[in-house]
Amino acid sequence: MLAWMRLLVDPHDAAAVVRVLARPPIKLRQVDLARVIQLARRRKLDLVSGLAAASESPQVPPEARERIQRFVELHRAAAAALDTARPDLFARVVLGADAEEVDQAPRGPAEALRETLQILREEVLAGVARLAGRLGEPRLDTDLDISHEVVRYLELLKLAALVQRPAGQGLGDTISDLNARLLAAATPLQREIFQTSTLDQTLISALRDGPDESSASSPARTVTGPAEPPVGGPTAMEGSDEDRARAQAVDRLKIIRREESSLGPFLPRKGAGAALSASDIETYLSCPLRYKFARVLRIPTEQTLHQRFGITVHQVLERYHSEGGQTLAQMLSLLDASWQKGGFRAGERERRLREKARVALTRYHARLNGQDAEPVWFERQFAFQVGPHHLRGRVDRVDRLASGTSEEYELIDYKTSRPKTSTQLKDDVQLSLYALAAREAWQLESSRQAYHYVLDDRKVPVPRGERDAESVRDTVLEVGEGILAQEFEPTPSHAACSMCDYRIVCPAAEK
Image 1 (cartoon, rainbow, N blue to C red):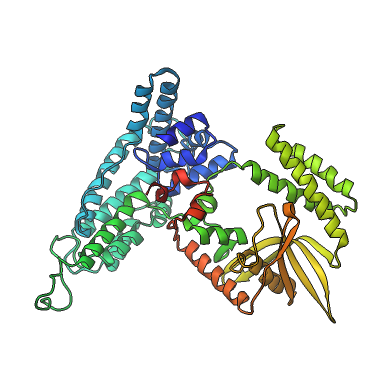
Image 2 (image 1 turned 135 degrees about the vertical axis):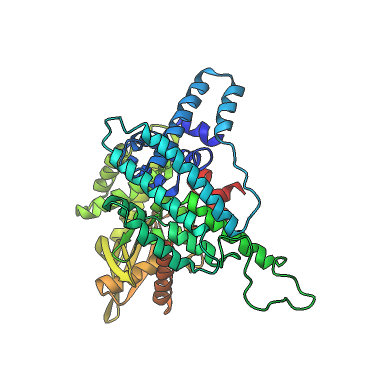
């Protein structure tokens, strides 16, 4: 209800739109949602307008178009009700669209496979009727619609054959044989669609560990191991481990209907690994599902006033140094120009923030000219590999420090947030990654790191231990592997959830 209200009032509220799309009665698949968001961003549309454009895109399969059309119709009806109907009638329209589906009691994999077959059969029949009505229309994407529908029919044949396969017949060999036979009857385009489906992987994952793996065609279960349980022990069907295995197998089979295609094409990748930044790593570590919303689905979010303020201060410092600025007047002039471009209003909060920025930059200029260190690089970029993963980013400032007979460098990152202590930063990832980047990309073997909290004129060093480089490598590998494996389970906490832009669409926020 809240999501519908938010998107009706503000079509730019992408998180609210995504929540509505992900829930009944729309239930748009994640991969189709990613396509829609990608299209909307490319055409610079809000997500509601992007959905209308996506319904005409050949990249969106017919079933997804039907779901999108359902959303468009509900949105039109809800918008009309918002303007003209009594509050109770409007609530009836929206609550009817937001009704929850009730899951049935868990069943074994064999039963779930037959249920999936029945559902797919109904979808194929509905698709045939839908496609038949379009064959006479002058549409450019009719051939693509036909190919998608033919592939759905081929997958229906595959499921039917799996249900009827003889007891004891291996699942993997059966699927391979069925695929070879079905692909022989397909066109090149149909083969491409068929081979990019993740149906096989889902079936194997679900049935391999399920209690009915040996025979998906029979409710009877073939028990391996001892013929009888120990005296006084539970039977195979009574154990809690058995119940959990059965429930997990059924849940995996449900993925066939919810998530038939992988999000792999939308993962940020470079070569064989993931493309990562320090911000990406910190986001994934704080909550993998938040990373998925922000970096994979790329759900648009509106910048807050404080975020725009922080960006403006960074831009002023970047331009000042890149243009060889010398005087305080130059720095404050850049602030005035950036403030106007930033679109800040003339309110009291904005006035206080602008004055805070002027005071902070005045202190920054005085500190810069009064220190012994020599700034040598500003906004210096880096790129290097950790295993198969590609790391990229840039360091705000690098100072050369006089240290005996050798030179040391200090890596400095600007912050406009509240200062943290060195103790609070002992597990910091960002500057540890920067230190590794200095060694790998710039061949700077000795470096220090510090955060410069510009608003408070405080520079807080981040101590680096001997094992930091090894630890950050392990962290990068762990995060990269999790992303490529599409492990995006939420890890809710008060600290992470209270600042998350995606609370309305997050399932963990409902609990």
